[in-house]
Length: 125
Image (tube, rainbow, N blue to C red):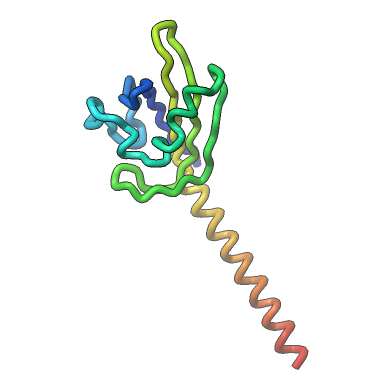
């Protein structure tokens, strides 16, 4: 299953320059700072503008509970420049399906290990 991705361009003030709105419609925030809505992005935002141009930073397995964006995502940030201004490209990759499946597999394996250990313990009595 292919993951959806959304690309958002953000200016130095946290305002949206452009978004493809693939995962969620962000147009209602067009005159407001995106940073108030996404505390994680706010916490690293000033550091992103200190990165070398085109260097990428990825934060994986971000679980969000916001009504705007519920699920598990990988976030990639990159500083770019269009000869007029610096901006941040934020790519949101919807990995909910993949990570939920991974959680189920891990849980099943853990339960199997616990059953084996219990069986071993009780067989020794």
